[in-house]
Amino acid sequence: MVQLANQLAARRAARQKHLPPDLQQSMDAAISKLKKARLADTARQQGDLMPDFTLLDHLGQPYRLSEQLIRGPVVINFFCGGWGPFSTLQLQALQQLQPDFQRIGASLLGITPQKQALNQMLARQLTVAFPLLCDRHNELAYQCGLAVELPAEMIDALEQLGVDLPEFNDSEGWIMPMPASYVVTPDRRIEYAYIDEDFSYRAEPYELLLALMNRERELLGYSHS
Image (cartoon, rainbow, N blue to C red; front, top):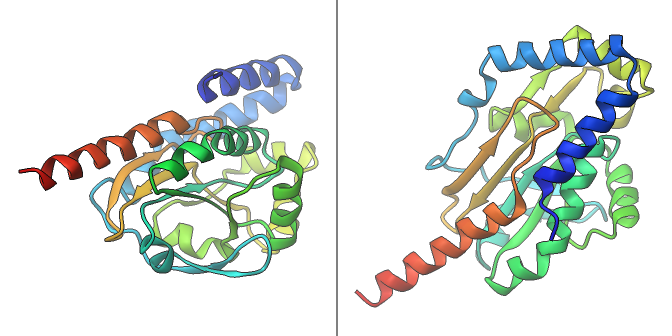
């Protein structure tokens, strides 16, 4: 199985090769600003509680975290939207491992601020079999400390690339969640957390699976003590 990190690296290399130099410099400058602000440090981390929430999935059905956690752990993945190539690579990689997550009693979940109709199109396009939830106005992302207002350099670059974020998100601002993945246990405790200010990096799906497997081993060990 090809690691997601390798796919992301190849996509970054392709972007470096094909993007006009001024756009690449603008995006690099924007990411540098976000990194210097150390925004990931203030987001929800391992050991914190994940807020309970109810959001509409890509089919327009309500999804409540606490109800799903009754069945087992939930792996939550925040992403910017289907317009982002790094996000689509992440979703496809997660889908490949979905049977493995299901075998250990865990469920997958994607959360994005883009409109529900776009989530429905994205799920169909990528043949994603897990829910894609619409976090309107990034309300949950704000609660988790993940919502960031994009620097002017990145807004300008995205506009030149034809990305109309306010239209995609049905919102007035240029705000996105940082890429983040969480393994949440039935008591809403965050067992594993990955957050990055750089939108071209994501958690490796196998690491999320490994965190769940390690938790299962610990629980089995406690049960025999």
